[in-house]
Image (cartoon, rainbow, N blue to C red; front, side, top):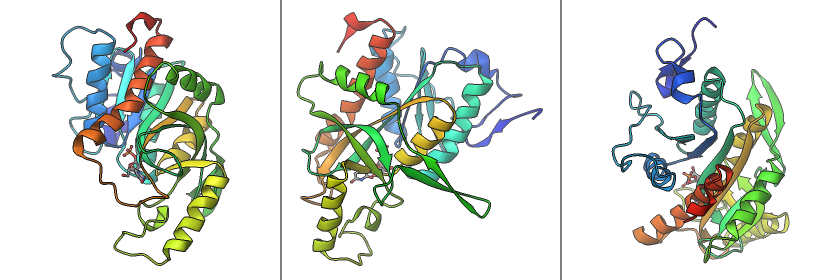
Length: 286
Ligand SMILES: O=P(O)(O)O[C@@H]1C[C@H](O)[C@@H](CO)O1
Ligand SMILES: O=c1cc[nH]c(=O)[nH]1
């Protein structure tokens, strides 16, 4: 293409010098919420001891309200909205951006929230394999009128490195497990409290217990397409999500604002420590 317009990011190869803007990016962290990703960028700014206080950090995608993007040194922090279609669009444009910017050796990590199964709320799950609603390690993409099945394996070495890093963070239970990715938050995750519900409490618990026996420890809504796209494009990828509740106990998320904020910081702390280690800044561990 003579020109590539990354429409949903409000960036383009003719309007922006992408190598100058992004050529030094080594870590990309993505998550659903714009505020969370801004807070992560500000946190990384402090952790990397960059100049200034980082409070006035600029949203690179301010020209669109679809996604937001912040850069702190070699770390890019990008929001992706909720669900597979939303993250998929962002990833297409982000991966092209990294290509146009000539970035190399990039590690990409989704830092999110999730519902746990059989584990304490507040636990952090590092995904070894993302599975679909049938507990299968696959992502089915409809392309033209074909269903194309793609692998959802994630980088095992990266998951283990992250797990080892987590041992140095006190009071945050962290484990490696399968993550189930669904197309919906309510019926799609076996919730009884949506506007629609077509199954009994017994059926819900039977499903979630079967998921647990299949190795699933948490449920969210982006990991399969994230793993599939990053894997096919050669990006080292990981998914690290905190659990907000135990789905065997309840469906409603009734955490106080402060607890919710603290839980959401847990994956951020782990990833910040990991990045600092990778950059040789281990003496600055939080
Ligand atoms: O990255 P976040 O925490 O937004 O991801 C999970 C999965 C859904 O997008 C959303 C549902 O509340 O949270
Ligand atoms: O239960 C939950 C909590 C957060 N995100 C989800 O997708 N499910």
